[in-house]
Image (cartoon, rainbow, N blue to C red; front, top):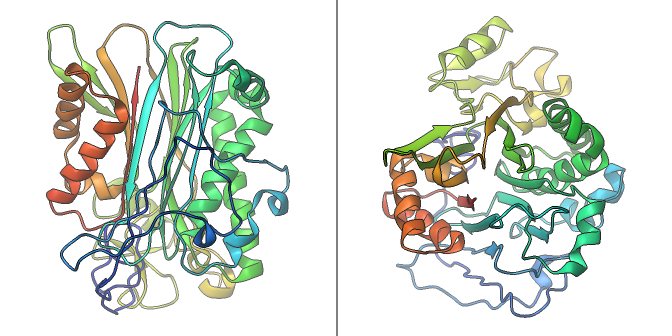
Length: 404
């Protein structure tokens, strides 16, 4: 998130409790080699990922890079119950690197040039990596051996998502796995009524996480930005909570840069509508933040007004039965894609670590310039992360670039 968890200057999604962020003296830089097949371990702290100690002048960084240029990805099993779908280490580890979950799949019908994507994620100056993401890509260039997997999952549909945790990484990690699995289970409705299916997936992910959180006293929360792309129908469905955003960009026929946000920002300071929604429900807004309904907002507040999780703001055990206004009800939107109306069309999905320091137009211009010079989405995602960091972002930063 944009500021350290449990800090006196907490930003979007962070809880404010009056303590200052501890400075990071040692960091990790982990680079995953995609040339060999990865074996997933229950605890990533035990995996054989190369580690080096950084100098004091280097930013704390954990890299989790995957792109459509590689077909290598951790094997996943998606059970239908919460118990089956949550890795055991998720509820055991206190401080662990966010998993990168990526699959490459092939659609049934060739649709011209394949969709390409790249994603780059860094821990940056934060003491913990709380971002997560997932991509399931339909691409004609995919190995034929993966087509059976595609049919079992979303078939022709592609899926992209970014989750920005606060108060810990567990809610983001859980949501990155479970929300996709629920869409797979409800694939028929996702095809026929995608908006309804996506809304249901958010609601069930929230319910299952809160159940787990009550059981294990987990106070984590997370934003979410999710896109399902149907190239056959020529549209995408978007859902988000919090301040992780999706931007549709490209170049119009007259050469003008196009950059449209497909999401809402659920942030009291930036949205009068959200502030009003909260106060109408009896919640408290304090200095542009969502205050806890029972505890003084000077002690405990959130910047985002919608998030998955955050049990402390939702369970009557902690709220005394008072409404906080915090909800996981997503904003759902749809847009036309892959219909030839834009040149160099792309989607850009990022957490607030990007958007706090980089404007939509600035990001779109960079993507278009680099696509025009032949760069791949992976390199472009890395360039956007550097741009945000160099512009002053100290937060975890995750950027996903999807090129059509």
